[in-house]
Amino acid sequence: MLYLVGLGLGDAKDITVKGLETVRRCRRVYLEAYTSILTVGKEALEEFYGKELILADRETVEQEADSILKEADVCDVAFLVVGDPFGATTHSDLVLRAVKLGIPYKVIHNASIMNAVGCCGLQLYNFGETISIVFWTDTWKPESFFDKIEKNRQNGMHTLCLLDIKAKEQSLENLMKGKKIYEPPRYMSVNQAAEQLLAIIQNRRLQGTEPEITENTICVGLARVGAPDQKIASGTLSQMSTVELGGPLHSLIVTGTMHPLELEMLQLFSADSSSFENNAFQRTT
Amino acid sequence: MLYLVGLGLGDAKDITVKGLETVRRCRRVYLEAYTSILTVGKEALEEFYGKELILADRETVEQEADSILKEADVCDVAFLVVGDPFGATTHSDLVLRAVKLGIPYKVIHNASIMNAVGCCGLQLYNFGETISIVFWTDTWKPESFFDKIEKNRQNGMHTLCLLDIKAKEQSLENLMKGKKIYEPPRYMSVNQAAEQLLAIIQNRRLQGTEPEITENTICVGLARVGAPDQKIASGTLSQMSTVELGGPLHSLIVTGTMHPLELEMLQLFSADSSSFENNAFQRTT
Image (cartoon, rainbow over all chains, first blue to last red; front, side, top):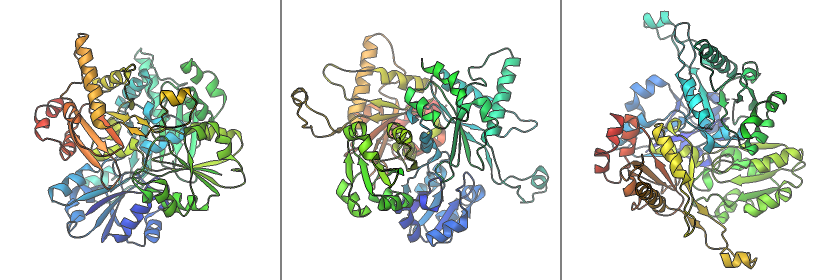
């Protein structure tokens, strides 16, 4: 049996009781290590589970799926995923390959950023399409995600923006030389995401259009959701470019139309209470 | 401290390790009992937690929040919620009341139907607004949710339809007599939801408009997601009106535009493989 086990978002104890029992029973346990991180490292997980973990980076999962699935028809193998196995990154590839090999699979769900963002008080059923904001480079500055945020907001919907993770990047030099030497991981902060959005707003104005989303649009910055040192800050998009949220992982929400109860919750987390006076209330009246 | 603890979706062991430790430590433990159900009852939870649970129905939470929060500034109180505390139903009211009383709170997240539906292979970031389908009565047959599904589909987005739960309903007679006698709980099935959608399609045609969603639109019926006897069936909306999924809780997804990998996953669950030949593929080509 292949078990896809969600680890939740915080630390080792965010695994479910069922998940923990499963991990302890499995012959081999893989830890998916490229799309997200917990606030604790592999060693802390190994100690808590009492099991050695095999790190599975993107290459392992894509190129060596068969080795992950080896003998999973006669023994139990677990594949651990931060969040939920079908959250922000799905593992459909691995499931489909298992099914083709006649290997049964089970999913042990957990919280993922896709539902845990509800903790800021915005209601999950009022979210539109989720988007990803990627790191801009000197030569590549895509803006397509901005149009999706605008569309959501025009429809009154909030937008969850997942922020880029570069977990196993090669420098151009190492890539060209074929050297598997990797740069330190980079995680986009709410500040960086807000700055890119503000730059797009400026670009749009230079092109003669006034975007629906402006410097004053109410946003929510979230850091380390589900961890003991979780931080949430609500305020204008401008404020998001300077708000202090600490280490990764960060997520950003651009609000749509807010229900009074949503607004009241957001104010618990306001970076600066004046930011709500001129903006958010206008959207609900 | 007030702890809002998600229980996940299946049985007693779907609580997280952190959640279980918290429950065992709390002076009073409430179980929210009106928006969702686990596949096991209160007694099974009490036995596993080693704690007595106080059932909190809608009236308790709304009218007696102060009794739930009593002394939570000096002792630990847990409020248990099936799924995640900020999933399909949010508990913002309770949080806001706690904050006003100066009571600190913590959220222990878990899977909810809002993210666990990803197990069917449709990607969560391709979902638009989540809608609720309510039981029609002889005199009240709202159709507004249909327009939201249509809008999502026009935007290429999938729609998660949460199906009605009548957990503590009074008959009109008992209501008028002020008798607190309740009808047996009712849970909308995928069959019933599909029938209401098919009726709306007929209504629209009688009004001279051809809806975007038809009898042949690919849908996914899900039952008891996260439980050992979970069932998923994909097929046309017509097929959803007769598919056998067993006991509650059910959810329905109306698909938007599908990515080939999403389609491949859905086919694992197809009620009748021929349903995919004429429909879904047309949407991706």
